[in-house]
Amino acid sequence: MFTNYQNEIYIMSMNKNTVLAWATSIMIFVGLALIALGAFRYDDVAGWGFAAVGVGFFAIAWVFNALKGRM
Image 1 (cartoon, rainbow, N blue to C red):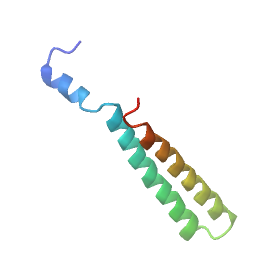
Image 2: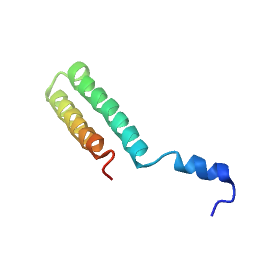
Image 3: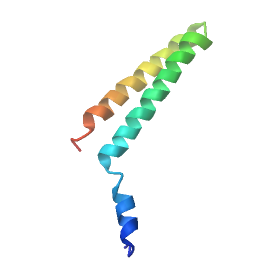
């Protein structure tokens, strides 16, 4: 499909483990941001919801981290 050898190296540089590592990092960042929003921005019941969703992001990031090397 590709005739240029450099394109094949560039495409193969992001394998499944790299994609899962990026997804884990992004989800940890978003989870921290949501927990920070719940703790510092919202003082009512909405803050508890933001914090709970942030903890859920941590749980999904943990699963992504556990899948690295197994897929």
